[in-house]
Image (tube, rainbow, N blue to C red; front, side, top):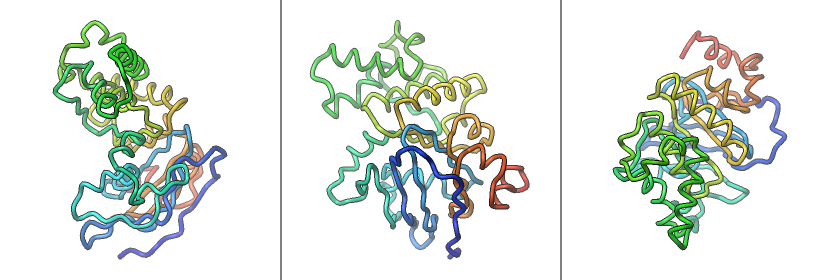
Length: 266
């Protein structure tokens, strides 16, 4: 078991804390994957989680909407709160939580349904609309927010799986938005996309930040620098350093952060 390390906390955020992890520890069977992670996620900011493969950043991301619940051997300890409420409390419905804390995965995963039904699925099952016209409006609003409406408005009945990779990813973002989340988690959302599609997703992240809190896992230092306001560096299951993105990338306080950012290891 690795020793618990002192996290270097750079300039604290000035905004409101939306989610907070306190001494978060994660185990897969006997193997410990995260060690006492303490991280504040600020409202309407983009927080980037960076670090080498296997460092725990995606494991921590999945803790934020209890996706690890579906892994039988996984155990989460410590505390994670949203708006001060414990998301692991016994009276919290994980299905409802995942509507509040949406997830966009590494590989676009549209449902084998029409473009319209991909977006309409969540609002239907969560009872967010009471009429077809309300549903139509919500589908259009979500597709507009995901910057894909103009590309698909004349073929809403076409299968979502027939779109390009970048369009599929924006459709998945529209699907997440449609259930009115407060937080959007993104697990390497551009890793399977070409540079043009990546640029569109990054532009979209900037727009979404006006209304949503976003946490993104990325292997791209350049992407983290472009899209985030806060950056957290993970290494070997420990949160090494967290702070304002500009400071992390120009003047990190921990030599391991410096080494990773400059490419000396990773």
